[in-house]
Length: 126
Image 1 (spheres, helix red, strand yellow):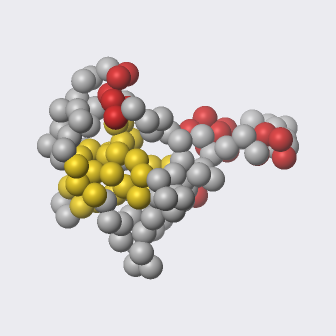
Image 2: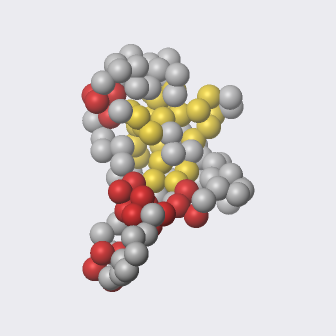
């Protein structure tokens, strides 16, 4: 799902995955960098076809999500994501797209300092 109408522009580069009433999340314990942007493969209506798989970490459900480059990445149900209560199980539900600026870059954009100039070099570090 895309960011809801009325959200700040900084949220435009993120997508969330929902399967019925279940929100899905990326969890660091699955072995991926959860902050690296991916372009999720969806049909013309925005629907994604995740593939169920047996959970590889303690979770109620796990899926692989296809990307436009032919790869996939794992997600689990939000309820059990992050349940180690430490940095090992960091999680995200709003998944960044490849062209999304890092969270630190977004913070800088939302809070410009007086006299701050954004150069092409700085803007390319997304």
